[in-house]
Image (cartoon, rainbow, N blue to C red; front, side):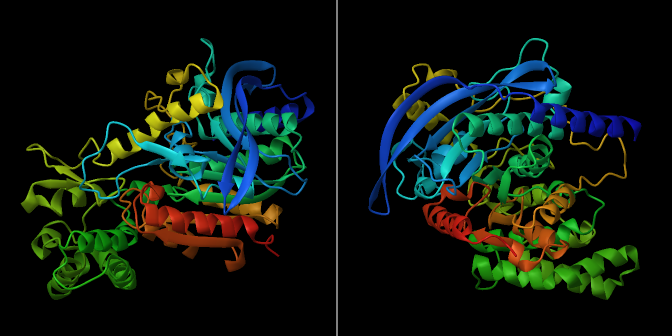
Length: 486
């Protein structure tokens, strides 16, 4: 407790000091004037690649953070959208090249199709650049950013320290581009959804005058307990059930005619009954246990015998191994439409993930985009930086901590009444499931007019599927155009 209190006090002091000090000037690596045709209209913009010094504590600049931005001559009310991926340890290449940037990598649409060595990159007709400046942020150590030899890694590899550094980067960009009075939106994916929630606090600490308008989360992980699926937490199994049912239907394993979307709704409707059965545990009589197992088999395609032998539950990871066991295939973790051969020694968890080669195409495509902007050494851009598995989520060693990231975002939104929240989830995502997103809002204090909860017919990287990507871009554009919540 004392250590966490001291850490919180240090961040408050750092925030106050950061707001009082002059903001660092970005070092520009490349800049060029370009244009794009969006909705039939040509939009001129400036593309820029740069890095900004950031500090682990006041007066100690021991890292840089990077950005790739696209901006147009702006009116004061034109929004700025800050965008990042997650990891931790990922640069923003995936959202940049897969969904939002002015150029987009096109990947094969059939999950069973062989993948090319490199994706075709073409102009993105659905980029949001006509309605907002786009600033793709790379945390210290990723992209072109760096950590000094004596950088305080304990800070940069923590939720609050990482978010504080990225907030410093965002403020420096706003100052250098004359946009400090603009409405600000923060879009994070996967772990980046946790960073987004923490970044709201960091920005408010560093500069209370900034106009925070909205937070957008793709593949949200704010309710980490449901995402991580702690084995003894019975809530996590009904929460995951809609995704299991949708995936089973997609792979034609459900015994009855179905649609994936309808299967997810059917499973969600059964979740309360399922939870009650799990809650009863050993007290549930054999007839009731058999009825639940039969219903779960009908929903997920996993045999009732399996459920009876495993206390009426199956983890998301084990589901990946069991669903297509007869075909010798294992489901993808990040997009269960993709499969890979099942190893003979497949255990409770299986890797590498069948979807990873698709993600890799976005990482390769960003090098071509950097060259288009004017960067001569794009291969030095680090898409993924693997850590030492010592990331600090703020839980310390306490068994009582529940990682309440949604709660801190709700507090910030209570303090900033104009802020709104958008959550998008892929139906076939076996990591951050649609049920976890629904449960997040079921337990939330937010009024319905403060949030949007959307789902898409794809996986964790929802924009890899073109149909899903178009729906997502439509929804993001509508969210940016909405009036502030009242």
